[in-house]
Length: 484
Image (cartoon, rainbow, N blue to C red; front, side, top):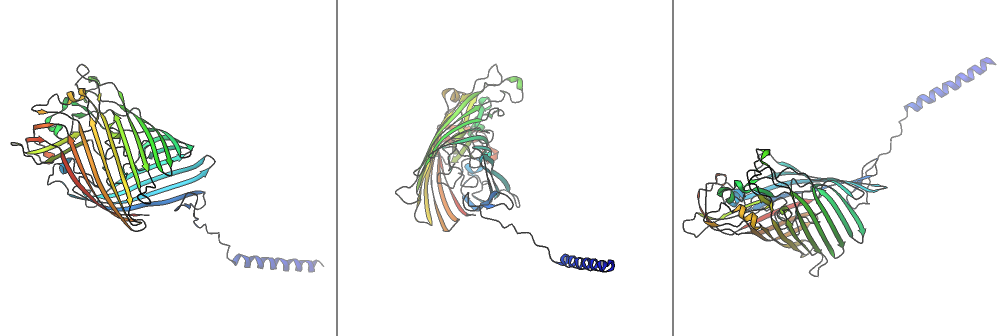
């Protein structure tokens, strides 16, 4: 009996062992593939990142530009440097190729959506070199529970930033930080399209105009649009910005304001014992209006802003635009070599070499209006008519300080700049646009008479007598852009 039981168990063990061996030879079941799924919560183009509840969108554009009779890319007028001097060293045609890449991620949480956004550009521009180029970071921010941390559009600015209808990056007359500004801000939504924001913003890169010590002014520096030594101190307090906005089906209305610290360095930059002027505060206010659903056609719009500043000039003449302008032209005055119009935007001026003879800061005022009418002829063709008018005024104390060394001419640093232009766009297929733009810029300066200016080798101008005269320049731009 024991022998029979042993044989039965042995047979069962053999069968089990054989079955196990055969099972081991069978292929294992493959894991399920995690296909990328569309995330429709936040609009077209978003996908779930595999294995997460975070949605991501990759986008951008590729753009090719050519600026004609300008000073830099993107239809910058020939209003300073070798271009303003009409020198043979200037590039009359300027090309730029750009690839822009954006990453937008969003995750729903119990506190609302957590969003990150990154926008970088890779550029090659005339003058960058055979294989050179440049990298730009436009935006890099985190949004959470109404807060924004990082580099984003200023809360002072409008949704269209410096582009009410233009291609040019150089339409002044209002605030422009299309490349973003570092900030910590909070936005509250009150319902019915009404929102309010408050923000602390980094003024060091885009919001400081000139702060000149006029003790060092010379005829040569004045003729280049410089009012002496630019003596802004390091930053201490960020700009304090507030905004109220109403978004409706008919368009948008917005009022924004900013407080801006004006802080000078030492009277003698090489000696801290020389002292410095007391700090002061400037400000800027802006009203913006956008009208949609116009009777002129579907999709037509009007975008308009009006801005005023005191001691915060860059809110009016700012963004990527420089502070100084200098344009040369012909003259009919006997004994004069050429005519010249120059101007400089500043938050303020002071003078002195020490606390014993130094003055306080005299702030400037500036105001500007900027806008555009945008019309769609049909789904493929559209045209925008745009323009701006800007004015910078120095008070009596500031003018006296700047013009203390003026001889044989009427000195007045006040100036105005008017711009008008048009752009027509053709979109033969979705997300591919070809456009052509032309713009006229007129510098209305307030000096009069003639001035003997020393040689300015940087722009090849000889020592000669020059007539003060208003100047105008044309510039144009051709663009091809593919969005994705």
